[in-house]
Amino acid sequence: MRTELHFHLLPGIDDGPRDLDEAVELARLAVADGTGVVTATPHVRDLLRAGALAELPARVREVQDALDAAGVPLAVRTGAELAHHDLGALTDDELEGIAQGPADRRWILIEAPLFGDAEGFLDATAELRSRGFGTLIGHPAQRSGFELVRSGQADLIASDAHRPERPPRLTAALAVLADAGVPAERRSALAALPGALLEHGITPLARAA
Image (cartoon, rainbow, N blue to C red; front, side):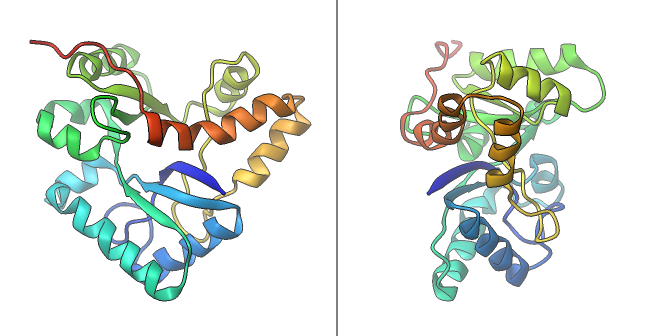
């Protein structure tokens, strides 16, 4: 079973599931697609807007309890999707609360800006590293994504699933890569690395004094 590191599963926070029933349905689709572990990654901006950042672990537990009760064999981890312009609003402790991976090797999912501000994005990733966190960059543009995979610069793939009508499609994505000529060994690595990142983390730069 695969691991997903970019998945909008928490209901009623962002543009993910509208309610708990929809979250359970989305989780069933993930399992059917071959996934056994997901990290719930709601948008930080929406967590801040709702005053729910501190509630994140409790909301993940609520979803996990619902999945367990429904017999859906999916393990849910805590995370979030950080936009670079929201970084300044978070303390180190709050960053720790949305980070993934083991102690001292934790990392944060930061989304690539869709419309410019590359300089601000690069500054934010540098700041995250200076504050002791590794970085995982989410959803580059489609053409850039293919080039990153072909050149060996992409480390993993994720579905960025949101709702049952925008479901997880990792199996289909791997098939697309196969059709594009990406070697089987490379596709296997892309699918396997998410689990390794959760277990082993990313070695960050030394935390700034």
